[in-house]
Image 1 (tube, rainbow, N blue to C red):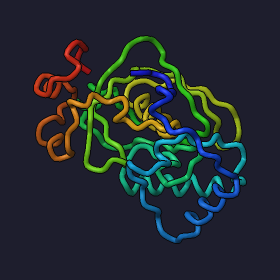
Image 2 (cartoon, rainbow, N blue to C red; image 1 turned 90 degrees about the horizontal axis):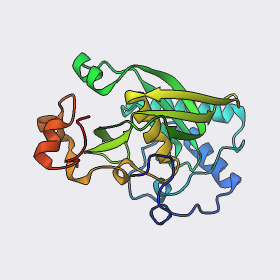
Image 3 (cartoon, rainbow, N blue to C red; image 1 turned 90 degrees about the vertical axis):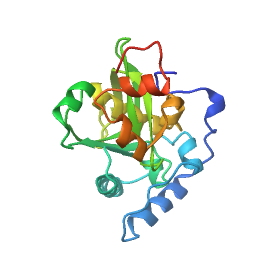
Length: 231
């Protein structure tokens, strides 16, 4: 499993020629619909294409409105991150926020701390160190499923902030997992591409059997990651 923001070329659809005009039309339609848009589900090609880097296709007011809309969709879902392709918009924009109340034992095992809201444009990440952890993940674009994903425990994120400034931030634990998951979306990668497929569970089975703070019980029973330390 690759740990950066690229993947094998034969697993990502080539970026189609996407005009600024078509992006603007899509965004305008979504912003003016008067209702929150649905979240695109797996099988839609927009989730499998490299999103277009943001280079000013939207003016400041449009970008602000889109980010506010994405945040509201994320909250309603509910989720801790949302990428623009998940609304059918092929732009490298994502929003992240994690303020959920989590059981202290779960939070400690997963390194989960509150993540204040921020939006990122054109993000990329690299691992910090060699440590990796595996935990179950879900995705708003794959309703009803969860699977264990082995990811770098800490990453360095480079991105452009909404005000146009270049930013670099380090993340660890669950925050690093969110950063990786959402950045991957912008490069045509979904979490199942990196998942241990023997761990794949419906939400109901996960809740009934595998919702412990770590993955050790699921790993033993389902037979995945036999040579890895518990997450």
